[in-house]
Amino acid sequence: MRTKILIIALTSALSWFGVPACAQPAVAPSAATEMKQPAAPAAGALAAERLKRLDRVLQKYVDDNQVAGAVALVLRNGKPAYERAVGWSDKEAGRKMTANTIFRIASQSKAITSTAVLILVEEGKIGITEPVSHFIPSFANTTVAVKGENGLSMVPAKRAITIRDLLTHTAGISYGTDPQVASLYEAKGLGPAAGNGWYTADKNEPICETMTRLGELPFVAQPGEAFVYGYNTDILGCVVEKASGVPLDEFIRTHITEPLGMKDTHFFLPADQRERLAAVYASGSDGKIVRAPEGSKGQGHYVDGPRKSFAGGAGLLSTAHDYARFLEMIRNGGVLDGARILAPRTVELMTTNQSGTLHSTTGLGFGFGFETVDRYGAKGMSGLGAFGWGGAYGTSYDVDRLGHLVNVLMIQLMPNATDIQQKFSNCVYQALLN
Image (cartoon, rainbow, N blue to C red):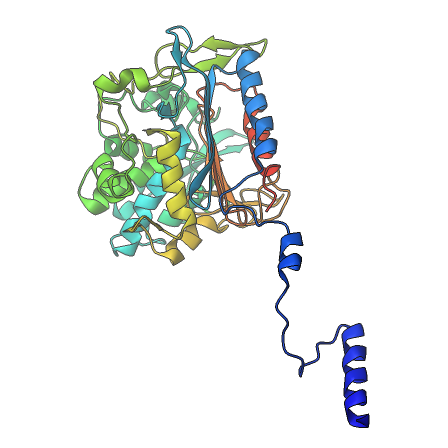
């Protein structure tokens, strides 16, 4: 009896101090206890009431005539958690924005082309540290434009430019609009002669012809010494063609877009789909939209162009739905709905900072095709390990692995004087409560 009393007392004391009594069997919670616990949110849920704020924000940009229209799509755990189309795809024509409107995605093409490169790396046809000159001979002896006391001089590159340099934008290659090289690039049909530098949809030649000429021009930094945003991924598009033996559009279609069911992602739009392409607008001096002009600095040649230049750095068209499927494949480790595009280790290379502090010293890095978030707060509320980028026409995206989110915003505004991308991102994250 005495022993029994001591055991009971000891058990009570241990429980008081938070130490589990190993001899005590676990007690199942009662029905009353379970009823008091808050219900777990659905796996794909964002707070519905809070998402209404995003509705109001997007509509206000349209009502204030700062954007013509937008499509916003958020996936949580691969399922749509938010999808809205607001405003106009072509205000003058009276066409409303719809969820399947097609957009010029410009530099969002880079992630898809980088994926194509890494598919060929996995096949052993490209090496990450391999010199670009193995595929494009004009890159064998590149030069760098250097300003000195006696003016501009051209010096040899200290080393060969590699595939890795191009994937991380550390090859020293700009878009040729820099003052020290602009006239040289313009004379070769690049830089200022190509609209905003990156635009090639109007060129009546294959991308490899353009990139071969580029290799003969001076660059603006030594390989591996600076983050310089430019023709890097267009060069990679040519490398894909050389390594695979097929045009870039065919390789992307057979290895990425078709397997993922991305039916609306093309370099040039079929003529019978032209009314699905959103019109391009520009922020005027008063912040209100004006319709962008025809040509390379506005509407472009994505329907009626020569259809010969497949620019891996800035040439693709897509929908919010299509691009979100591509991003969900990356978020999911390289596979989606049974279609394996890349191995998980390859995806880690893409989405991990591979450029140290060359891209940023404030907590952002750059992997193989994506900007990375290495410190919480470096990019708004994007979580540690998030990755994303955007395009010149105003499109943007963010993949947040901690939040299980894929966020895509599509607009067509160039130049863009609004802060709609930041407001969109903030409104998504403030609705993430679990």
